[in-house]
Length: 326
Image (tube, rainbow, N blue to C red; front, side, top):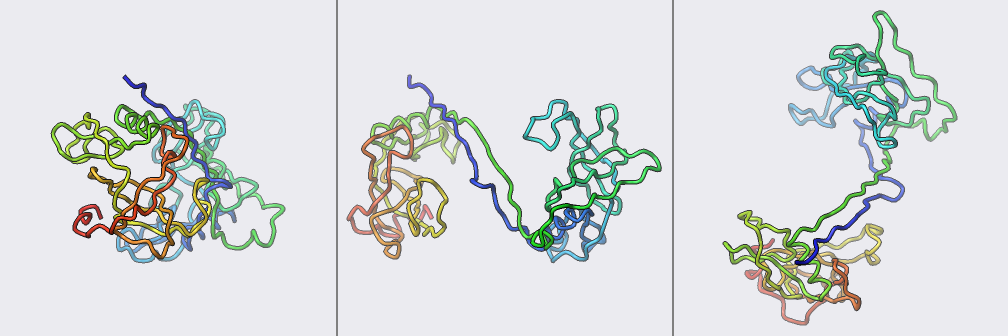
């Protein structure tokens, strides 16, 4: 029996995941940076915090911004006794809680630094503990803290060492993201990976079906039956759909832009196989193009054994032969 493959992967965006935030979320984050909390009023009169970009009742643009809080009420919570250092907002025991700021009709997930589980209760009053260095992020509130009867919330401390550029509205954010995980291939995918190391594409078929799935993940997607029967499929096929990529840097393996990625239905298979297309200009690319795999000289049990796909020289396939795979 072939040993099942286990592969370790790291998903990380160099420099962090960058996104624009739009006018609504942008104003919410700008308010946090400036030491206040704002929600939006929607068509039924409720005030949402954090704000949504569209009215969830009518799908129309949201209405006026409304300042809420800074005090709030814990609606529900769960205690984290052993925080993951460096992974969570606090490195000591804390509570994740849904907190409804005064004047809001919805609750906001954040953390409460209560000191101990015994200090937590549903309905308790809390106030934000603002960060000194605020940049326009939910982390501008370092944590919420319990508030005694009659106690006033502290105002946000002034920001220091702020450039003129940083005083403008918040228009984007950068989030560091890193995910490490192991993939256990399983029996069917292991067969496929072993096949790649041998220069062939292994598929799988369930005993109850005639349909063959290249790089099967172990079950027939229509019936759920195990694809226990190994079937070799061809290393050539027909392009069904494709896209021309004009964004550089999506992968260390990606060629210079523009290039073409395509879905290919392999001869003998009933599903599509994703591949990089080379060997023709991007404006020559078309549906129905017949392609063949170009294998690496050094074969490995992974997708990199196929360097790319290129035109096979055969006539284009008739539309009726691949229309079911669009």
